[in-house]
Length: 71
Image (cartoon, rainbow, N blue to C red; front, side):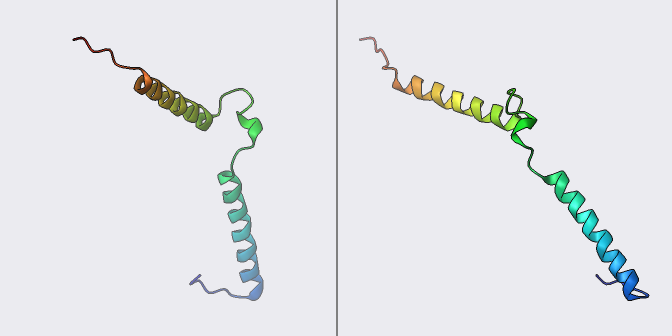
């Protein structure tokens, strides 16, 4: 960055510390493993996708039903 360092050692410490912080941040952002909810149906994304698919199927079934018109 824009910050000056008193020595190469101080600069290297800062770089090492920044790398550790970056790795921690990346771990927090990591995608959860399948065992975090997929096996017991608690994965929010999966639940939302299933709900969306069910809605689409429902709409398709409604479109396929012939409408009965009275004369």
